[in-house]
Length: 345
Image 1: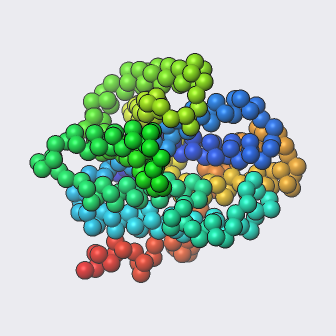
Image 2: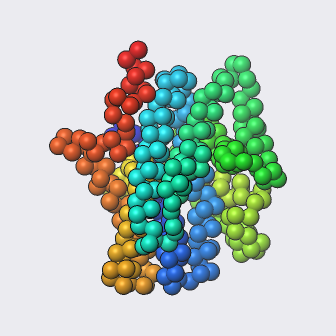
Image 3: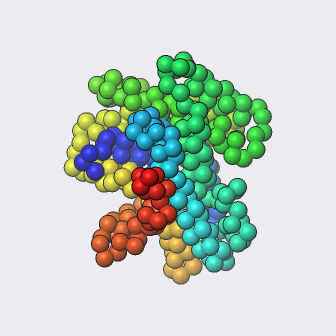
């Protein structure tokens, strides 16, 4: 990880913590394990008000450098390997495991639902489906600033976001319209990194104040949830992104040894995202069905730790020569790699 931009790993690490906890807590709540329903709904709404926009923003950070490096065709080929391939593989793996375990989990899954992955993604995999679509769309439509004013793309993305507030778009256009603006903002963010880095503490404190104020207004005063569509949703998401990214820049300045674990979470965020539902659900089944534990705290703690740590262990095992075949859980073999085929031409 030495050559990586460490603040991005910190931001991804903070984001994936929220993703895993959010899904584990939803699993616990849906399983009927006793929790404070009002507190659960509040925390769930706060997390979901910004954590997925954060990942679209972070995905957009290196779009332009990658486009310059690989070109349009090369960039799309790279995303076929790194996004579409794991989407298909893990949709099938998780889906058929869910079919097998339908009697032990909080939902019932059919084979038909699993095989509909090309037009209707399941569970957490919608993110990879929409992310791949946005990468392809951006690669096709992007034009440099010499031919198109820089404000055209952000304004178009912003218009699409407001459009989905008032018009019920079909999938995946509704999700693309909802998240394209954050990806586009990410493509512009590297220009501001050095400026914000010099004022990371001040920026973090300001972002924390704005984020807290908006969340209080949204939830406590207006009694809204993240599913209630309004212009405030956009403000909440941007404030949350600003808070996480400024905090990540601040942590990167400190660069303490004890924070290595957070960078590791960010480095392994893709394997964690792919596997955490399976591992978290597996722990819940063991605790509730075998050990008959019905207290929420053990489920939340153990499920979250399993959702974070088990994927990291599996990912690290893929680097061992004697277990080399495991690497195909996250990247395609050479014979299936579109990027490798282009390189050979």
